[in-house]
Length: 97
Image (cartoon, rainbow, N blue to C red; front, side, top):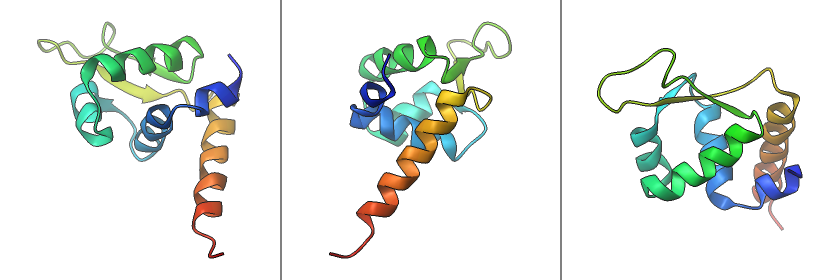
């Protein structure tokens, strides 16, 4: 997927910003943090996971009931580009006219 399409969604931008602040986060906590619904968030997480931007350690590491833990794949070059693009966009929005 074109990285511009990844950034085209405000929700995906918010997910990336939130994930950049932490090493990992539970999905339900992420739902609250970005002000979304589980289903909407999950659809966007699938896109990010398919691109290798996030990893889901649900099956490997954490399994207490329905706990699912998401983290950025910081080794993926796409992740680094997206985080830098978000930082640049945020800086541009803070520049007075």
